[in-house]
Length: 516
Image (tube, rainbow, N blue to C red; front, side):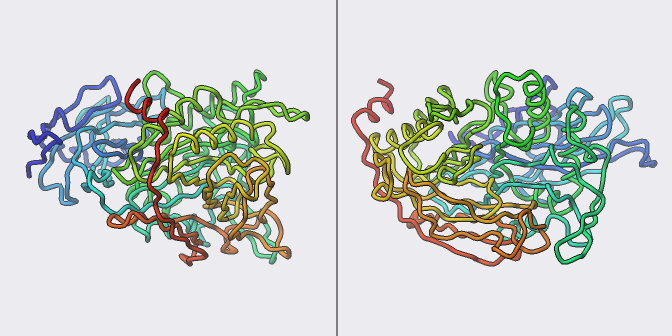
C-alpha cells in the first residue's frame, strides 16, 4: 500500500515517523522474532501500550519495559501488519523508569494506524520481548463525524478484581470513541490503598496492593508506583491500547489541593509528581517546556481541543477577594490567541476544574461580583464575547459527580459574556460525592446533576454504580454537537443537542488572525 502525504508525494519511512529521543529512526521492513527460548532472558512489556495527543498527521505512542532496552515499533494501516509502512526505535532507560515515548509524524489523516511494539535488550540484541499491539485513528481532514469521551478521577478506591476492576474504562470502550480526554486526577498520590475496606452495606472491598501504594507518595519511585498500580487493571490497559488519550492533570497527581506557593517541600513534591506524570502519560513535549501541560490538539475542521492547566500557575486566595490567578498570564495569553486563531467549528475548553461550583480550591468563591480567581475567568469570558468567538463548550471533572451547567448572563452578577455550557463528569474509578452548591457570579443553572443522594455516604465506593463519563458526538453533515452524560453501566442519564452558531469576528480578532 502506498500512503500519500498532504501534497500527494509518496510517504517515505523517513517522513512517516520521528522519534522523540536521541535514538536514530530505524526504518526496517520487519523486526525479527525473539531468538531466545527462555522468557526470563527477554525484556518484558510491563504495563501495556498507550497512545495520545493524536492530530491530523501525528500521534504519541508509549510503553514501558523492565530493563534498559530499545523500543522497536512497527507501523501499519491494518491490524494484519502485512505491509509495514515504517518503524521507529527509542531507548528506555533507568532515568525514565524504563518508559519510552515516540512521536509519530507524517501519518495519513483520518486513518486507522496500528503499531506493534517490542523491546530489544541493550545487553544482548538477540533478546526481544513478546510484541504488544495498539491502534489509534488520526484526525480527519474533511468534515467527518467525530466521537469522543471524557471524565476524570481514577484510582482512589484501588482495584478489586472480584468486582470487575475499573469497569468504567470497559464501558467507555463500547462507545468506540476517536479519543478520550482525561480531565485530571489520573492517580491519588496522597491516598494509600489498603488491602481491605468495609463498605456501607457490610461487604468487604478487597484491593490489589503494592508497596508504592501503601503510603502517601513522597519519593519519585512512589509517584511512579501510583501510575504503575493503576496499569495493573486489565480494563485500563485494554482501553489504552484502543483509544488515544489527551491527558490533563489536577491536584492528586501531587497532593490534595496543592498550590505552587513557594514552600520548599511543595516545590519538591510537585517536581517529582510532574516528572512521573510526564513519564507515564502519552503527552507530547512542547518546545523546550518539558513540564508544560496546557496545549491545543487540532482534530480536523470541526474541532479544536484546548487543554488547560489550572494547577501549575495559580496563586493563593485571600479573604479580601483580591485578584488571583487560576491560569496565569502566559497561559491566558496563549489561550486567547489560540481561540482567536481557531478555524474549527467547535472549541472544546477542557478544564481540570469547573467554573461555578463553590470550592476553596477552584474558581467559584460564593455569590456576588467576581473575586479571586473569578476575575481571571471573567476577563476570558468577556474576551470571547467581544472577539466574536462562538461555539465554546467547557468540559471538566474533579467534583466526583456528573452535571450539566448552563451559564446565562441574564442570571449572573457578572454579565459581560455570551451564554455557554459546562459539563462535568467523573469519577472514573473513585469515591462519589453529592452535587455541590453553585454561585451566581456567572449565572450557572444545574440543568442536570447526579451524585450521591442524601441517604448515601460521601466517598461512595465504585461498586455502587455512581461512576460517570461523558460522550460527545459531532455530526459531520450538520455540525450539531450532542453531549450525553453516562454511567458505568452504559446508561444514558441525560443528553442535549447544541446547534453551532455562525461566528461574527470583531475587527480586533480579524487583525490578530491576519497577523497584524
